[in-house]
Image (cartoon, rainbow, N blue to C red; front, side, top):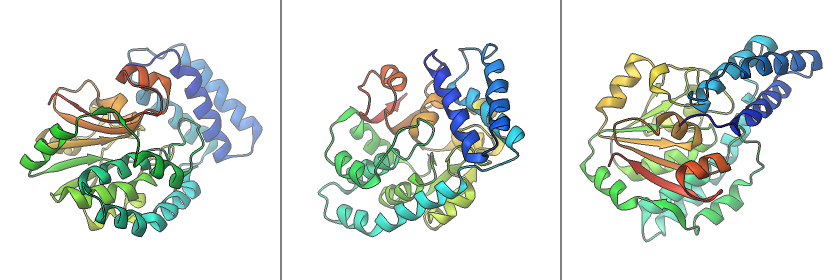
Amino acid sequence: MKTFLDCLPCMMSQALRAGRMATDDEKKIKELLDSIGAMMKDIPLENTPPETGDIIYKEVRKITGVDDPYKKIKESNIQEAISLYPELKEIIRKSDNKLLTAIRIAIAGNVIDLGVGKEFNIVEDIRKILKQEFGIFDFNEFVKHLEKANSILYIGDNAGESVFDKILIEELKKPVTYVVRDIPVINDVTYEDAVASGINKVAEIISSGSSAPAVIPELCDENFMEKFNAADMVISKGQGNYEGLSNVERSVFFLLKAKCHVIANDLNVKEDDIVLKGINI
């Protein structure tokens, strides 16, 4: 997906939030905004938004000297999600369609997104999403691919969400490789975060090999790309991964909530719709 003009002010807002998370030094934050503002005029709109995000967060790390400004928030989100795990497993146990309910719960975790600057309440969003109609619902195709798959590549998004991903992985009942960010970026899941969420108990964990806040094939390492190309089924979580992978030639299933109008328009759904979309299926 290309970058739209409406993405640019959002990216500046992300830079400001990350800068304030990293430091209370107003001079450094101003330096950060000046630097990124100067870069904006040279950013091609043909780039995906996560490619621009990679540039922004490199500047955040360089200017503030802080590698993981969202660390404490990620830890808090993971612990809150873990506290809900027994209740969510019970909801699935009582469900008539355990897989679909697990998918809904995994999408509910996608609200924990500090990149879009929206407030969220995990419990309220779970209750809503368990009943919400889908904007795109390629569930039958998802099931068909799952039944045939011997290997699944599951691309994670944010750290707290990974607890919800674990719940879905347990319902897939197939060997899963779980993909994390190579280094901390926004509140995205890293290897350390995935282990804290218990993903290591249900899946192999690998890095994308990229510092970008999404999987962008051109920026990922050889090990990831081998697994991406060889996997029988790819599941991609969140808006950023949709932005990075929506034009790939292989089949991918996207699970997300459309949290901004740019993504909603690209998907031809309404803002706040939940989405289970397959491409090349």
